[in-house]
Image 1: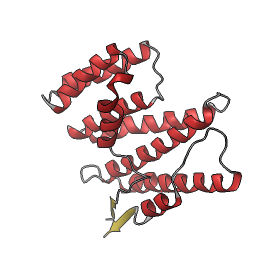
Image 2: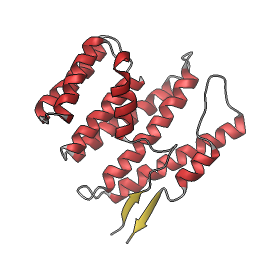
Image 3: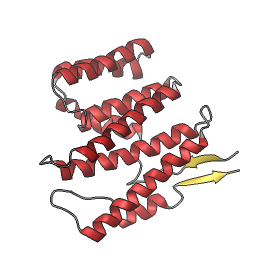
Length: 203
């Protein structure tokens, strides 16, 4: 049986730890206080006093309150909460639930990218969401390849999608030029370093 093990490189892969550091802990001030309050409790029962039922309750309440207050589900902050929720599921070995959360996140992001082309801030958000979705796909590949899941076909599919998406976006920019407000994509050096052994196949 083929097992896919991933080599994680700067520029293509973001890890849950990076999300936790950059989009949650480091950015509490960007959450409205009612949302931050729920999230602090969720993280407490995740990282300091592990109580899965309470943690899950507070993650759900975090997202509910955020929706009630009108926070965008495609903001860095809410994407970070969803990735952290998937990380929590992975931590308690609920791997299929972690996969489900990330699959929904990936699907929602791609649906927005496909449908929201007329919004005035589309270009920059497309770049931002596409980059994060690539990272989600790589993380899905890792979860599918986990020794407790072992869905190697799905692992390969997610990793190939991530690699092809990175290269396709790079080629589009080279062919069409960078559109106004699109922002930076990965540099050729970052892409080359990331793709050099993106995953290896072990017999």
